[in-house]
Length: 240
Ligand code: ADP
Ligand code: MG
Image 1 (cartoon, rainbow, N blue to C red):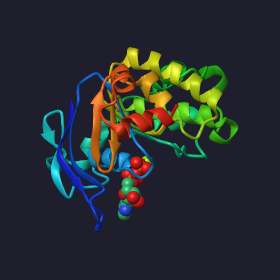
Image 2 (image 1 turned 180 degrees about the horizontal axis):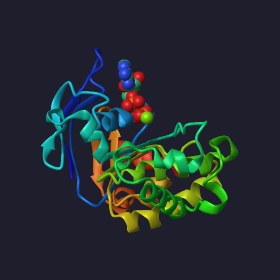
Image 3 (image 1 turned 120 degrees about the horizontal axis):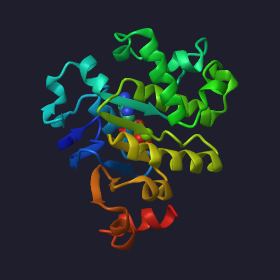
Image 4 (image 1 turned 180 degrees about the vertical axis):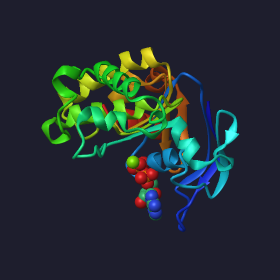
């Protein structure tokens, strides 16, 4: 479970996030959606301590992130961003194997796990494991990035617009695959997007952010059928 408790974040000027309280239940996929610049990425970065709140608290598994060792904390939190940043001089398999928290286990175990994750992401190891990132499409690179995040077997996944840079067809395919994967791995996931269709397709719950606050937090159908206010109505209306 991830809990945001009265989180305020300012970068010096007016607060970007004003009093955000939100609970991400264990095992669920919660979408954070809202206009560009509304603070979605900021909210994720507060979880893995790339940023610190101006006030308020973020609790992961019941313990404040501010009281946890950042390195140990990040090991429990897989983080996938729009551009995955694979190591160009390493093969696909090496990129996935490299993850620190599995580096303690034997080489063979690591290799087997890497290949399993690549298959799970729809990348046939026989065909892709030995390739270099430059020999892959954007969508394939993104799949490797997700496999790499999963290699550490984190309890949570934080995903910041992981599919946004992809073309619509690749994107739809990855969404499908991600739904299957989600059922198999059963992790708690916070997924940022600005795409309403993606939010509805993937989310167990959707949190609509705007003007620094939570405008609505509900199941996808509820958001679509009963938007809480004009902001949500116009956001989900225009986004479709
Ligand atoms: P989103 O991901 O929803 O598009 P962000 O969380 O990236 O929005 O940014 C929210 C606001 O905070 C923006 O106005 C952005 O310019 C500002 N911001 C984000 N990070 C920083 C930073 N490190 N320093 C100063 N301002 C920042
Ligand atoms: Mg962002």
